[in-house]
Amino acid sequence: MEVVEAVVQTPSCEPRLPAALRNRIDREFSARWTQQWGGKFVLHGRPAGPGAVRLDGNDYLGVTGHPEIVQAQVSALRQDTEAVVQSGVFLLDSHPAHALEKGLAHWIGKEDGFLCQSGYAANLGLLQIIADEQTPVYLDSLAHMSLWEGARAAKAPAHAFRHNDPAHLERMLQLKGPGVVVVDSVYSTTGALCPLREIVEVAERYDSIIVVDESHSLGTHGPAGAGLCAQLGLTHRVHFITASLAKAFAGRAGFFTAPASMRYYTLISAFPNIFSSSLLPHEVAGLAATLGVIRRSDDARARLHANTARLRSSLSDAGYPIHQGTEQIISLEAGTESAAMRLRDVLEERDVIGSIFCAPATSKNRAMVRLTLSAGLTEAEMAHVERVAREAAPILQPWDWPIARRARAMAGRS
Image 1 (cartoon, helix red, strand yellow):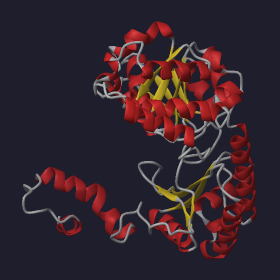
Image 2 (tube, one colour; image 1 turned 180 degrees about the vertical axis):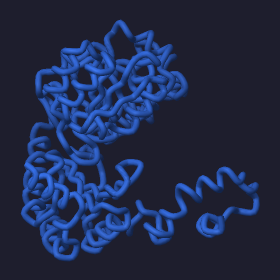
Image 3 (cartoon, one colour; image 1 turned 60 degrees about the vertical axis):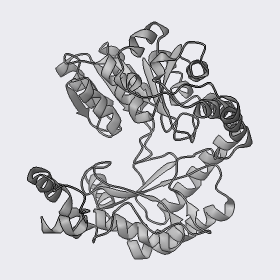
């Protein structure tokens, strides 16, 4: 355990950790720290300088600091002196949080909904109350970790089907029977778009519940930003829609829809809702104002999609293997964690800031730098990112990354 103790200097006021925990840290962490990360935390690069182009956030429409949102938050902080900090299950139907829940649900095209502390809590709470030990849950292999944890909270048998493969889902449903089918609309590590219509049709044939996590499409896709389900005309065929409100909404909350008939069942059954405090009044006010801004943001959505198409084309032309996605999340999958750190460092040296994603957010040896685009990127910023990508390509040789080699091998077999 000498390695771990050298990495983490335990203060003298702390008791010595039990051997079982020290052994686990050594087994699961120490080799990564020393051999792959070189004694530096993998997710922390250099601070962004004043001229850096930030592609490491999720504010897709650039709503942060919008005057309507700021004014709503400030007004709530100044005026709401009677608020009680308590679990959301105690809030009466007349509370502003419930009005926001209704507003979000009706915008999406659903009857009712529930605010949660985070998108993670929303997925955990929803799966916990709609599945049980006798309910198979079928999850796309790239579904967000919170959805897998929701299945585990429900003690449900969880089965992965191949990413974006409706035929494989159908074979699993044939084998194991009806249950809950869970997908992301846009996948958070690759920017891949779900073949949602085909997934819904398969689930319907086997009388299964459909859950769609719209975290990365709510606000950015569909009429008035109402999401991919709305864009495809599938809202009335999808049982539950969930979303993090830390993406296009740039806030701190999660949300899931449910039929109005499930309201009080959910309030007394979903553990994250019961055992977490409600959002604060200024957060509710800010999110309500953000909903109004997002509904009017067709121009920003158009800019986001234009920026996405432009940068994806430039990166592909420069030799980067980004074929696994199409949307505003762009994955530069370098492979090992040390390779992803080198990629990150090369970009940061040239003032382009992305985010490393690695296990457990990705599979082992599929580490990546994730670039997330926004409507607020200027022409100069876009041109800078394109220039850096071209300059870095001969250094990084992305055409030799494992994902590029796999794609060539698959193309050769077809």
